[in-house]
Image (cartoon, rainbow, N blue to C red; front, side):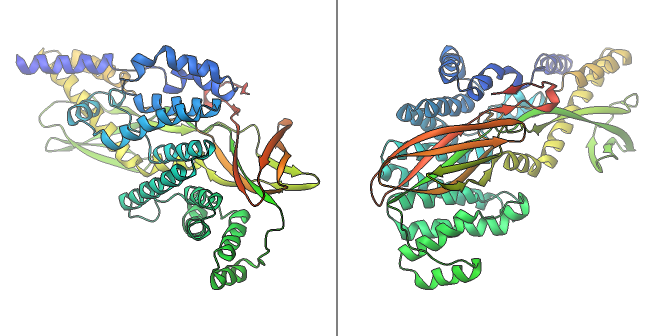
Length: 470
């Protein structure tokens, strides 16, 4: 009786835990407010649900979204307070065995969301920018070093060189921060690390080579740091010549463009092959997958196939894909330095075999429970009916940090000392050019980082919405 009661309770919980809407659909209004620049409305949405979100399974996403909203509003101290909470959550929280076990057996959406690897790195990206924009350069450097430690942890986590284990742009960002503090030696080292990751990793994984601007930065900082031998070696390698600075100052433009991908649910049909001795195999010939599972003496011969659901990313296309910065008659094109959209796909794909295994195990356990209920009630029809309901109750985990930019571009713009205007012009294949007059005030000999955001994006095509978030 106890076993029968447990099986029935487990099964009912599995059914009611099903979540029909994707996380993107649940967060649609918030996403729209961010993409359209209505940051006050986005902040209000978070504030209205603060008490619930702060203790929820998605508190990581609450913290990072709160941090991003305040960053975009220019409230950099408040932004870092949110990101600090996210940081502490990542560092201190440990997944609870009971919670994770229940998620495996019932539904992954009941587990706490801890963030993808690249999402965790971007906490440090925004924190470093916040400190820099608060003119707290020492704190920005500390954050850059913490970012480096997190990158080292990522490298140790994945020994396979084909996996996303190092981030080229994050090293480049460290170089920029060091350089604005006139620390040319460390800037050179960071730029060199970035260049090597672009050439050895990014070029293969993301078809993204080192930006020309990074090569210029590498040669220039080698010269400024007095590393003549290294400077000449890179000049020869790149076919470039070192030119001393002639401008009074320079601005590093960071263009945060578009919005990153969202997760949706998709499914695969698996045929069930009975191999004897209490074993079955879930087989998908279309994908070349086969997973064995032991069901013991449970009679499941009426079950010939099942559908298993998994998360996958869907791209939100950018409204703009090119930008130039103009000062007087001089033009500087911004180059792609980080494709967060592509990194998101890579991170999820790297663990898809594990996702397949977990989802299949969860479905198999539900099916065994369904048939056992039928056996215990002397009703094979009941077991078969509950088997169908078990398939319907399946739900993939579609949570992710959806307000990240699609891509980050950068360039270096020489400017005169004092006040000046950078004309920043964005263009796209189906949009009118959009100009922005950006005012800068800079001291002679200074280098400044200037982040700019254009977070408009088309909606995911699979949701059949044609309009743009703009």
